[in-house]
Image (cartoon, rainbow, N blue to C red; front, side, top):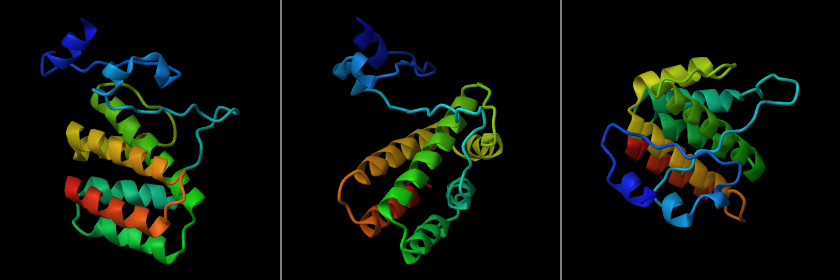
Length: 164
């Protein structure tokens, strides 16, 4: 019954299924969802510091300037960014876009990322934010495997430019 409600729900509705472990939600339901992983704040209560690259990537996407995202990702390639650093960057960017989605739905986002998240929520549509979250999550998973950083950056550039 829940599956039918999710599939045929009203267009103005959004369903949020929260779980510490995604496996507790049935696969048939998860396959129709966008998974957003929220990371807890650091133990000392301070939000983790965002790198300049993360801020720049979010700004480039939020400004919707064609070529700006690609230029930024090419610069990361030139710097010889390693896979772990890229994965961290993608995770942090994912967190900012997740915060932006929360803002779109009227939730408060405390912390150092609020300004950037508000910028994204203001300049992008809900669909653009959700699609970007999916992309960042997908490429973050790719970094867990022995995939070349240049391939990930190139594919990410093409797909992010396609969202704009």
